[in-house]
Image 1 (tube, rainbow, N blue to C red):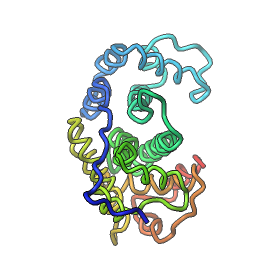
Image 2: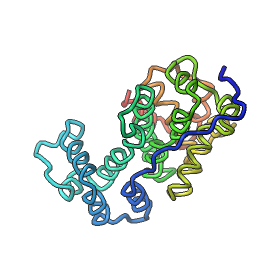
Image 3: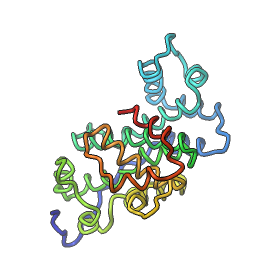
Image 4: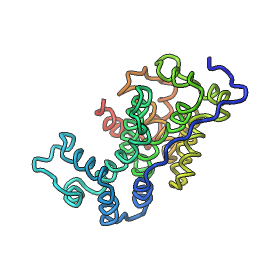
Amino acid sequence: MLQKAAPKAKPGIIPPLPEVAVRLSQECQQETPSVDTVIRLIESDVALTTKVMEVSNSALFGYSRKINSIPRAAIVLGLRSISTIAMAAAAQPVFSGSGGACPVRKRLHKHSLACAVVSRIIAEETKTVDPNSAFLSGLLHDLGKLSFILSSDTSYANRLASADQQPSLDEEQMSFGLCHAQAGAHYIRKMNLPFDVSQGIADHHSSIHAEQPQLVQLSGVVALANHLSKIWFEGAKPNNEQLEPFLKLESFAKASFDALRCLS
């Protein structure tokens, strides 16, 4: 059990998201995002441009000809793809920090990327929430854990490093005065990111325990993606009690499940 702090440990300070990431998110939330604006935002950051070009030319997309510019990437891969790549790349320094990431932070970053991808696919397959909001919420859903890792309470990071001794929400509440979902939502609000993203992060644990979880709510999408990504990419054991309510929903048809299952 985590020791109860007296007084409660203070969460650490998470580095702010780069401004370009915030502006990209805001643009992608528009009903009709501007291709020119997205391209201009990515090109305004040299490191981000380099990363987007690197991923665009990787085996992940399998394009036979070399993509040599952000506008070309937008044409070949589509606005959605380059926006997703850019958001993931822009958020990386938040997880790794200036001195390089410790193993616990690397693991947290890897899980967050997996959850982001699965969240987007669920949103696209069920057509219940905006895929960009789903990706961003999945990417940032565990930022509260990062703030606890950066706190003076080193026992939290030690617990996260152990697969079978993960801190519970109640233990987080006892040690820090709030759980990681609440801490992450607070961070998102401070960054002036969309309200639905902060709400989806705040509720991503409570929704999966509800009697009838609703995938029309962003929190439900993130909750399901969080659970599935742990099963498929981290070797966690399926929890049928948590999964069954989702699989009974009409919006989560067999075709949707098959589309997700191919990721494993």
